[in-house]
Image 1 (cartoon, rainbow, N blue to C red):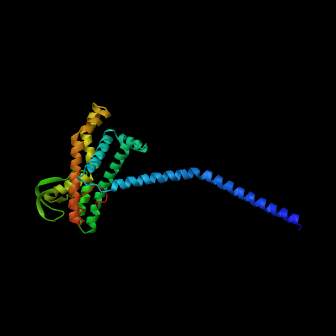
Image 2 (cartoon, one colour):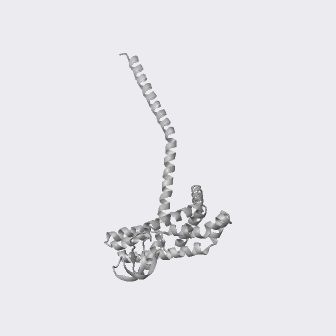
Image 3 (cartoon, one colour):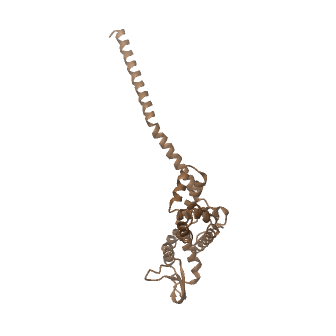
Length: 276
């Protein structure tokens, strides 16, 4: 092969290599451009996940039940639920829309509502803890209180056997529904705990009944939604009384169950899903 032919063949190989490299660069650039929307979506999902993690961390941090912050969290849960009841479910949707628009008040209210929902749901853990330690009678009583729509009520006459202590007592506190054929009674000394456990674990149900009984009728008859919402906001029986009752009841439930189940004391009870 002549030198000229060799040079021509070398130049052709170099040109082919350059063409291949150029095609690779173009293909990579095209793939990068095509993948740009996917990258943007992935980044957006990552940002949303980070925000969700921050919300969860905020909702599960320990907050002293005696602090003002705990009262604010419970109060905002009560207001959101009360407004939602009189608006037939529209107020919570309104809060969610405002949260999606990153309005501060809506984000705080939604986070506090989530924290309270987790707190109430976690009371059921006491049932499994009592059952795991062999306290089947206590687990049964707590389960009945969790599922019963009726408030525990006192029977002042007749002899009954306490489901927990197996001791005969006059009267007693019935913890299951009247519709059930077999009544379950506990000694009257457990009345405060039964009322506290039922009130906190059925807080959503209790709040709905209070608001419906006090405001739904007048809203339908005489007032607009805005006027009823203003009444609820100014109603100290709901925004103060119900809130204080919940905090006191929750404190008593945690203190009683921690002592009974041998859970190490923390010094002060907290509002978070780490209390159990």
